[in-house]
Length: 323
Image 1 (cartoon, one colour):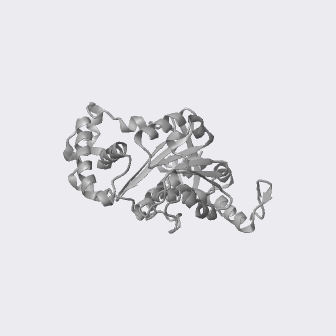
Image 2: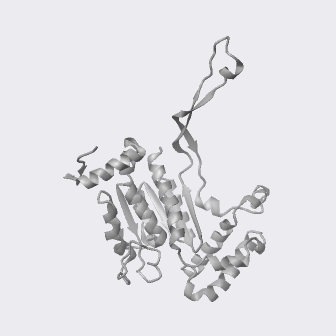
Image 3: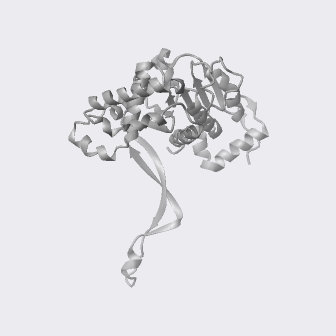
């Protein structure tokens, strides 16, 4: 058990030490040290952003910067549990700060009320990982390209009604370790049968295997040439949500916002028109995305935010621990 831990020349409480001890037991001392040295930027403090923030703070990163320039509205706090009910009109990052910090006093949580578009390139270089929510396609591509040049891990995600997505770019050569059952060599005794000489898997023992994987950039993943024969052959295996995301990102670019429930009729017609334009530009039929999609992509739903935020937060933690 860890009794005391130094934190910026101070001694943390027994409660904080106990939380740190639980985290060490969860994924090991070395992994926890790497996580405790990580600084993460989170852009967008709506429902999904709150879930990601909660997961990262409870995991025990060193620092988390909450960046959001928008003000709290009744709509924005429906799926956002970090914002008090009486915070309408306040900045979303500032309004989320107090409850976020209470989740884990050992994490340095900061609020930044600037627009992410106004940030210079070197602003992003101070972080080990950047998570973007509620951002335009052009901004996400820009940040992804910037961070790739410094080997900073980039994650993107959003929730639209019943739909949600996440994207990660961990670089051209991302090294990680994977736990696998240990293989025991067979016996080489001359009088043993052929079955005894075969390698066997011991389910009670595991070994850590080093691996390397290459990730494509966000720009590459969103700008697939569907007239290419190789891409055409993969079309049937491509989830329809990929094309829905393209439509919703185009809506955000054109309107500067996401589809709103209070303008459902107008936004539904616009979504259908954007669907036709986007798929035509790709050389694909509009039948690929049925008209019914407009009924399920308005507003943020708390359960969907919880699921996507759980996956997104877990992937960020994995990157900082399984290396």
